[in-house]
Image 1: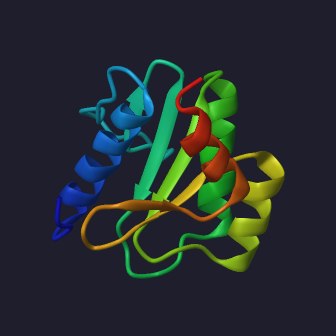
Image 2 (image 1 turned 90 degrees about the vertical axis):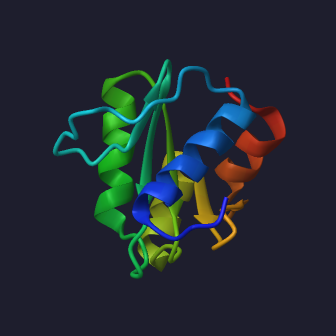
Length: 121
């Protein structure tokens, strides 16, 4: 799926999460302040379609949202991640993926590689 819009980025991420084995992945009709774009049983995911690297605060908020929902947190970004966000995600075990413009997610940290290898928990 070619990424042209933010909606395309969310749809590509949802499809990838389903491919990994997460069931019933949906985009909530009402977006909360936590900016979680996708949910499923045992899953919260954020998709950042902006042209700036995803920052530390976004990764920490996603991790906290996952923690409070006893869910796996997964982050997707079109522009990559700041060094601080990448380091924190590694420490917290948050999988980070970068979406290329063809809609193909690439794992960019160890937790993402582990999720790709093992699939959904």
